[in-house]
Amino acid sequence: MATEDWLPAKPAQKMAIDGDQPPSKYISNNKTKFGPVETSPPFAHVPIINIGCLVSSSKHEDQQAELAKLRSALTTWGCFQAVNHGLADSYLDNLRQVIKQFFDLPLKEKSKYSREAGSSQGYGNDKTYTANQVQDWCDRLSLRLLPINQRQLRFWPEKPSNFGETIDDYTAKIKSIYMVIFEAMAKCLDLEENVFSKNFTEENDILLGRFMLYPPCPTPDAVLGVKPHSDRSGITLLLQDPRVEGLQVLNDGKWYMVPVIRGALFVNLGDQMEIMSNGIFKSPIHRVVTNKEKGRISVAMFTEPDPDKEIGPVEILVDEKRPRAYKTVKDFAVFNHECFQKGIVPLDAVRI
Ligand code: OGA
Ligand code: NI
Image 1 (tube, rainbow, N blue to C red):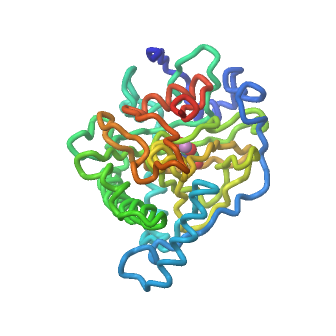
Image 2 (image 1 turned 180 degrees about the vertical axis):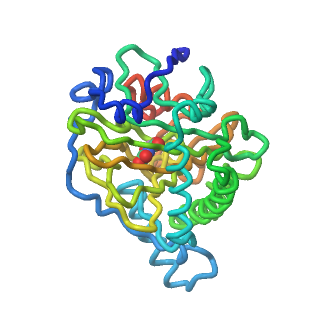
């Protein structure tokens, strides 16, 4: 694996404020696979799943209907919009406000939390692995949220003063939503409810939070907020910005814009779930486009198994009709990230 060659670059937010034209390394057209940038493709009509109907206490028929919808969502799109998840609009607005307040701080203040070379945590922009890597028009703060003893508090902003408690509370709430989804994924395949969740127990589970700012970009036709990738995670839960769309998913070779539904959380599977499900569930390729006038804030929570744990297709999903589709992987998160920065699709590299 290549060693990281990270040089601090001018944050996208600062370039936007200074009125800079994006430097050539940000221009993505014809440099990435998966086609040129399209700023307004058709909407992705991905299923809307009522999380309240997935919990065991819900009415049997409601649960069965929702599980069928979930199965269809995950085998076709690999993603869905989650509603009735128990988090109020005002709660989510407050969370976005806290993130906005962080990004609104002067650069000097934010730089106290800058990511260091070799670390994935902290404030910064795209890590650079190769000279011809296309850069994302996006600034991020990445934090390991769980397990709690792996938090590196020196990267946790002190301003706004409620940052820590807000993120801590959101972490706990997201974690319980995750458990409902993991069990529902097993049930919708008629499997025992812990087949997936057991890889994400308290001791094994890592939860990573990524808080992103996509500043307005003068050339949205040529510059992406995030280049095409699939997530390294088991599952990703994304809080979008209600004021502006940006996220796109690839389905059957075509790009679709993910609509913004107020109060919904966008859920997409990552590569490790596609592997565990032996390819039954999809880990969709997705990207983010920029906008000329509007900046966008998003909050992504990635749950992934312990890097030391071996992850492979669950045995019960491997049979003569569906032979093993993926090799067993370890420390896949790092592998996924490096592959995409180099333009390789990580699942292609582990497919049998
Ligand atoms: C990601 C991602 C989408 C977004 O961070 O992996 O796909 O809308 N983010 O910020
Ligand atoms: Ni992603």
